Image 1 (tube, rainbow over the protein chains, first blue to last red):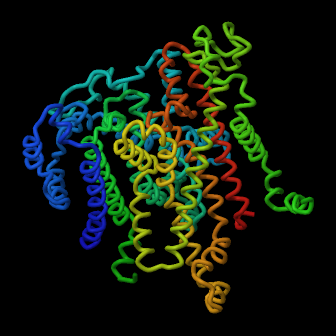
Image 2: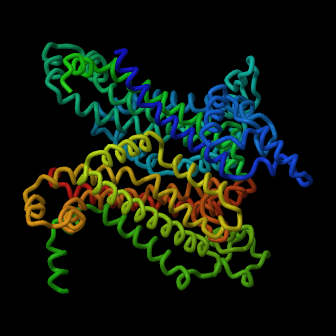
Image 3: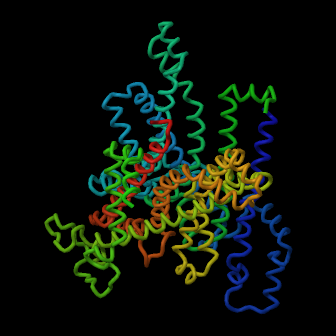
Length: 327
Length: 304
């Protein structure tokens, strides 16, 4: 187990280093920070002093080392666009994105798994057919169109839900949450449906496919022959065995949720990290882009690591395979 | 010619095509989209880029079947008095162009690298597959967004506007090559050990020639299927990038750009400016995806 974790972390390191190198190359070769900081009037001596002060006269690898050291401490300099520390900007926006992503993931799981079980068990009922058709639409609709359609129906035509922003938020230390106010919860509904719909349909289809597969297995027939009630067979035997692939996909999809949060946040003007990133791309605000790039990669690498570990914990076959040292 | 046609109509592919009404419907929808986009300059009722023909008095006309609609503008007009139907036809042109080019680029790159990795093996193979692994952990839209963002930041604005279309094609293509590379590598490794390849090697055919004229034709089957399914994805990626305002330039609006522009008028009740391009996009992507699904099943002998 320990060796497995170590080997996984060692594999993740080069990835993080490559991403850091790309981020740093953006800093080093795109735009001229000295020109930005000096403004219009300056002497050559001032320029030299600033170059020395910023360490830009050092060799590339020394600069990269400094950059890495700062990045590990969460220090990414000032945003070109807003002239504020990047770390502060991201810390301000992170709760909004995380709350949105979390709600979307929970929504997808809580609705997706039961629907998948239902369509797997009663696959010829008209309700199952309806859910399946609906899931096909969910897969084909692009995220931003789902958002626009929801806004059109619920905000413009019916006027029951807000279409932008987070509503009122409550500060808990540095974390600002929208879960505690009525407007905050109302504001969360449309964005989280938009973000979660694709994942919901994906989970539903996956659970359905796995259920169909598992229900054909011999141990299910045996469980029925033993006279176990349907409930025990369906949930105790069948559903439990579908969970391994579901965990993997849900874990990996967490990354996709964060990525598509950029789109959802743009549609709903949700003040999260994705909106910050898109605004930075439009204005070539490199410090923010570099920080976001590193943060997202760290997040993805961590998620992958956790999924691997969960897999290891859930599927005993993996452990036996390694114990014998077969491969 | 006649013989080829007869062979085509006798084939299993055609048979399974005529057996599936949904596939035939999606083929018709896809064909309408492609023809409408291809012949937009001749078919479109108005030219949305001809500034002289635009009249601000015509702005925000609803679709022609509503009370205030005008017959000249079937799907209504946008904020500048442009005919929405014509804008959609020209927009679909850009969307299809970017989608096809990006898929072609991803296919060429992926097949080349996959062939090299699978045939030559060794360090090159290890390196390429490691890159694939890393890239596949990130969603492709994020990769495309990052490449587009970095290029945008690196180039001065005037230069970027001129090559924006190529940047988008490049970004989407790069984000999708690993799928092709992995598939081709896998089948190449199988083909490499077959007798006809060994025979070619024994009689002294040069490795590049073996790869191109012996191995390549035998690994292209699955590539076709992935490319079709990938086309829908590439069109969606382009639409998403353009919707976010970082895709194709505003002078060549795609369906995504039209949706973004229309989105600003959603609240004042002008829903048609954004909904019609949206519906077109869905119809296009859905029909391409269904065709891809059908092709995958039809070419898979196990499912017959």
